[in-house]
Length: 184
Image 1 (cartoon, rainbow, N blue to C red):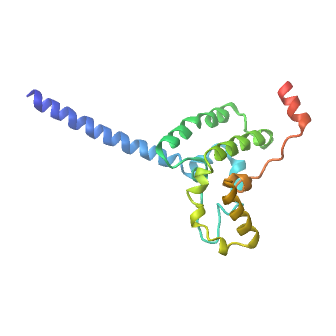
Image 2 (image 1 turned 45 degrees about the horizontal axis):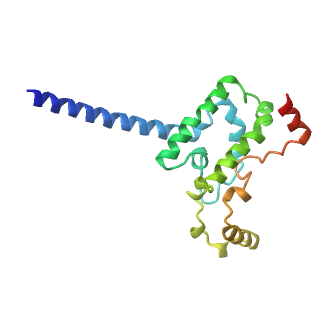
Image 3 (image 1 turned 45 degrees about the vertical axis):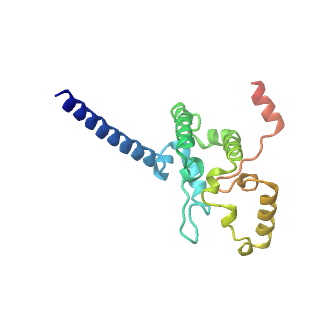
């Protein structure tokens, strides 16, 4: 009798684990969709900029969504990114970026945070689509061919040259403004 109960409990635990894993995976997939990412008011500025880029609309019909650039594919780094996304939710709740003016006031800082992350991971998310060994430099225009060849030789990463590719590149704050912000 005890063996039957143990077997029944094991089956229930196994089924519960499968259901949990399925729901967890569905949740991750849902939070990686463009509609979810841009559902917050503060992301409307990004959405409008993104719609004007080749990552949104291209001749080939390939579209990179927010998660393709901002969420790692590997499970461990993906979980870290998802946990750290709490700050985005927090700032949405606090209204830190609820107007275009507030968004613009924080754009430089936000962009630099993303650029630093991309640099530290050798543009890992970019490289999930754009791989050095898959680039046909002969098919690129002269300038791109020269720059990509040099960048590879020099160990540069995508973000070294392609800042502002999916969102407007912010203007660097003036020294006086930056010092005043740090003092106040």
